[in-house]
Length: 332
Image (cartoon, rainbow, N blue to C red; front, side, top):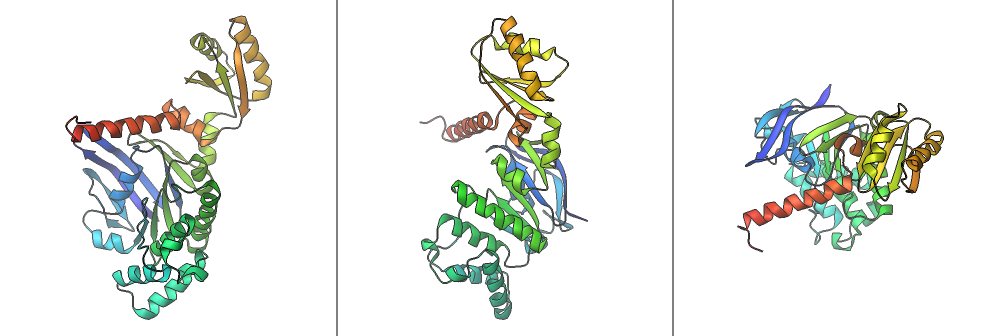
């Protein structure tokens, strides 16, 4: 049975189409990832699914409840971990959880039992009575995840849950999320722009670009779609000529040019590198460096969008600056 069912879901802000007619079905207990740069439409999608904003058109059902017509029923069956911190830092961890449970009408016995359970799940039992302002960033994120589980949700939304954390803490949060999903069988939807996060955590991943899904499958199948090996070439000149010549080779499955480099998808990449070098030499082109590796989700993103995630992040920031400037009437 599907925990989430989305049909032609669209959200517009004036002429800007933030989410563009997406379709999606997520199974019960699945850990699903929405991957893409800032501005791709991930957070807007989560806001529509969690009833925070209404779609412009299309429909979505959570636990078989319509997100626009049955908002109270949807809210009872979902939990949310927001991108921005939302804890009361002047309360203890236990008090934050207790306040949340009261908002959902849980009686004292149920509150106490659930607080103990979720604190143990995220390994914060010994920190329960410490003020949240004295928690580390990683501890605060774990407490927010615990809070999202307080009212027994069937679906948990995690919006950039490790944003701003250091690499080691981020990896610890990944492990907590994965263990929670395995133990509690809660359906989870995770937005992220960290490629390795989606690869490590998710059963399936949808890659978003300009409000659309450009690819959707398991991380492994997405990587297989790119090719067996990735050969990256750094060149100093005449990249168009080399791209054209390599593109004529039957053993080159795909080739992309970006930021002064060429990226090729080939089988048995180690055997193809000498051939690539000879072709470049015949054209009088010097290759500055060669890198061989297995495909990553970054390569998948490049394959389907023609651009790297970093380039897309820069474009998204530029678009945001333009929107802010427009709202200010062009004032600087």
